[in-house]
Image (cartoon, one colour):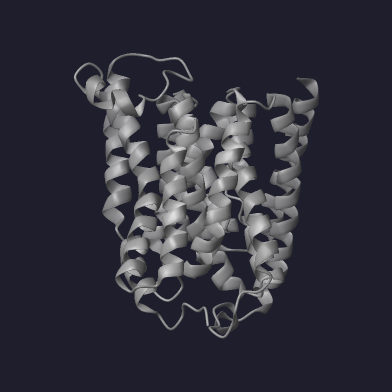
Length: 118
Length: 257
């Protein structure tokens, strides 16, 4: 049976993970702070600069931290679902649900692969 | 001033998305393209950030016992994420005109789905929506539909729930409430895959995406906590009309390019 209302353990722990509001809050905070700091720097035309590439995030921090904060906030938003898949994979591994764990590992691999697909 | 307008656009999309149970991308992409005259790929990339924000907002507001079927979601995601990466890569090669026309078709489909969902939603009780005695069927069809939904999400920056929910409900025999919660969970993962592709390609512009995403996040939270009490059938019809109008406008824009 595939059900959720009875609240199997993985689903219950996933609900706790889903309720990690600080994750979304931190992402929103980073984006807001970066945006406000960028606005104090004067007017900017749309669409503005591209997001800071992953490989240059640390290097750009010293020279243009508002841009890094905004980029990091967006990346954090995208990492939330990735983290949820990783957490589900961990739950299934510890419960030795091998087939589901293998599928979750495949999804996680696809997600990590998409980081280099562009 | 224009950033404030972007925030308001995101807020509106977030609220509308919450009202209709959609990701909000169906409103964001045409708004960014038609009102702000942004290139289609920037609009789609921004919309993906908005979909991620909606997903985060929904995750923060999910009621216990009303969550997704994780086994179903992860199995379908194996297919959907592959489609999303494919769609994201294809978007870099498809002409903006073709994207506009394709988006118009998807807007029409979404409008039809919204009408059908409104009719079904009133008839079913909560117990039937979340019943536990089901076993998903027709996996090959479900996986194929998930692949298409992922590709459309990557191409057009929409969640793809208008494909996934009907397929899970009508073909795979999953209760409607479970199908909707599962689709909401999947949307975030799918959008993350496409987002990474757009991000690495340089199609994400923080100055556009951030105010929009902050608006969407605020709107999605507002919608999740407050607006369920305000749902009304006439509002659904108004929003369907908006979707049809935006679809028509996108169609015209596509043929003019």
